[in-house]
Length: 242
Image 1 (cartoon, rainbow, N blue to C red):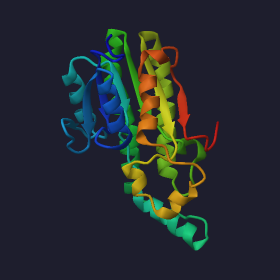
Image 2 (image 1 turned 90 degrees about the vertical axis):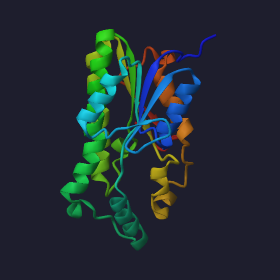
Image 3 (image 1 turned 90 degrees about the horizontal axis):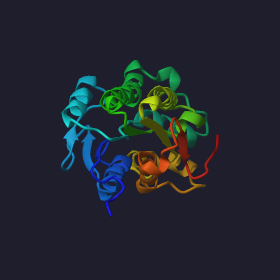
Image 4 (image 1 turned 180 degrees about the vertical axis):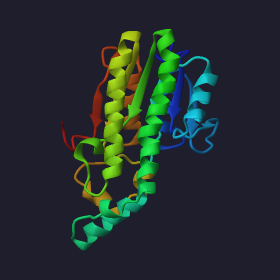
């Protein structure tokens, strides 16, 4: 019996590590032909900066066929995290926004929000004419709990959620499904760079593994979720609900 993704062409962004790498492995194990894309060279993958629309468009156009997209590429802001950590250790509220420069704001927005637009647009262009396709975007629980001192990241992910849901409503009549998985703290390289005091703030609940979040993404990318479109699925271990 064929695997559930047998013969399908899947593009995974952010596939060099963490959630994206776990998704790529799981889709490949299910029989998909996986194109792994990342900002840096990956084993057998392609280099693409999702903040650059030309690179994204050229990558997708070159595939010829596209059945599944899992968009996991994203960035955080280590300097802002350190300022939050310093404030926690000093027993004072974090003060980040007043000193947040336009460059830091633009970096987070250009990758997280603009990059999602570029990937969604390219994927829709490829899928709508075929009247088929599934897209999964990796968002963040930060879009809901909006951590103090992290306004640019929270805003970028909230924008990602709204963007994906708006496009999902537009393309579902054409047979294309878009959903979002919104992880909480996850044990990725990004989390490993998080200051210890911030990691301890989440000590009440375990960090998810990339594989656990990938399981949700792969479910949303498969036929088992055929009636799910425009959803934002919280995957934060019950840290909070909305």
